[in-house]
Image (cartoon, rainbow, N blue to C red; front, side, top):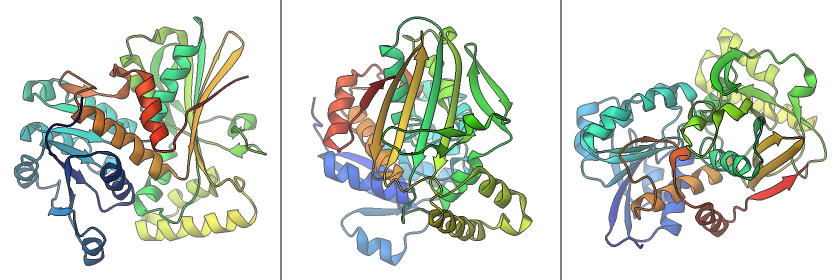
Length: 373
């Protein structure tokens, strides 16, 4: 089914790094759409860079004004960051406007607040698709694939990201790194969603060997929304999942670097945090912390019956992979091929055949690879 008529899309946060990548991917791969970029500030340089794209000044903190603007669109994509600053307010606005929305939210607390809007969204006839970026989103697909290919029995799941450092890093990304490490993390234990202290004392668990890497790299443990949403897939027996955790290697950054910056009062200003992390990254790069790898990697691993199955993807940077997956979901939604019912959805409740994802990802130079250990 092709797109019959031009669809109007508003990308809120389109002036940010992730937003720009999303806009570019949609323009390249999805025909018959009109894209406007929404932001509180549309500067001169941005206007020149995107002369043929509409610009809309919108402030999500002004709900009534935002509702009036959003009513003019068929779909809204939220590329705001960090999402913790906005919570589920953007999604409430879309519900009031009667317009479907997609987000690339990666904060588990916000995910839970968004799912609290399910009945409200259904009553308003709106679809809310949350966590449709790199993680969750593309990582969710990887998890579902390794679970589908594994045998019956108790399963241990690991989700791992390696995020390479790029010149495009913005303040939102720095804030994500700072927010990611917390004293408590969410996991799945014996089929139940739970919160535990982030006290992995075994140093062996702090390192991970990604495919095609020469050396182990340091992992920082945190929370992934899949710990909360994985149960939404009806084909998975969540009781078989005896353990699930999530860890990231931020290239050039170690856990102790992030902890120090979070603790010192001097670093409370976001601009100072940004420059401090950039400096630390450069210093660590000199000493080859986290290796010389140039690509980001997302990997899901399932251990079941003494067999380890992995599914992973690589890309030039996390922004490109985030944009590609958000764009794919956008295209499928506009074609009516995904999420037929209203309400709040994560990828787990999708009925799309994996072959469709394979094809659309491959078109964007993202290939899913498998290995068995």
